[in-house]
Length: 246
Ligand SMILES: Cc1cc2nc3c(=O)[nH]c(=O)nc-3n(C[C@H](O)[C@H](O)[C@H](O)COP(=O)(O)O)c2cc1C
Image 1 (cartoon, rainbow, N blue to C red):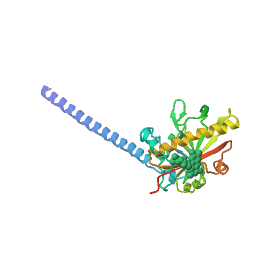
Image 2 (cartoon, helix red, strand yellow):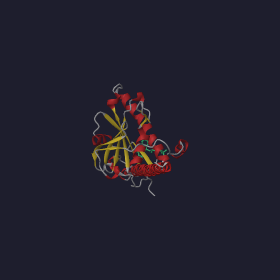
Image 3 (cartoon, rainbow, N blue to C red):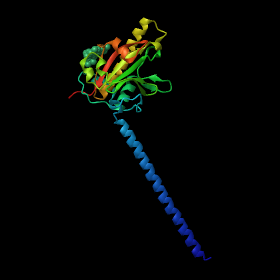
Image 4 (spheres, helix red, strand yellow):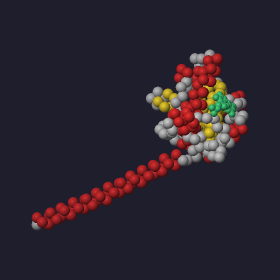
């Protein structure tokens, strides 16, 4: 065969392969871009979603909490204050997740240690989240909420009238099962001490995120215990959280 013809055919084949490769790799790139866009949109949607506010769920996987950002801690201390003015504008699922993580979430996954200290590491402070859609209990280890009771019970979270306005009320209760090594007096003393750290974490989160908050001892502990189905424990404090009313 003519040598020139063979070279020509080889060049044509190489060109075809190169064009084919270019088409294939461009297709791969645009598919990867599309899938990245879908993931990003899903993340964006999740960060600005208000599912908890609008739908009563038996359980809810909270979005992964943001563990970076916020204002410098010194500025948060400077801004920390009680504010009893609440608008009824809701918090997003992401904000609820971030708030709960700051309050008493797991910050050392290898040992399940928490953002708030607790005496003998009992980790006895449970958080019940009162929302328009229902009362949920926070499972810090699984970053998850599970439904205790459907319906809007926010106004029952505390005796101050602002509980009816604030979109989120946290009710802090001690689980005495986790304090079995303590006598009754020590259970009362240490749980009352430990809850202060959780509440202060919430205060600092609110300061850093321009949210109003007020912790309250003026609450009906017995009726709240019944409402959340607490058997061996004590309701300690409630804390209202929301945007400031203009
Ligand atoms: C344990 C505790 C219980 C509180 N109970 C209530 C309450 O029931 N109602 C209320 O309006 N404020 C309550 N507060 C908020 C205090 O009144 C408030 O922290 C205090 O006036 C100081 O203001 P500051 O937080 O802006 O520094 C309570 C605070 C703490 C620490």
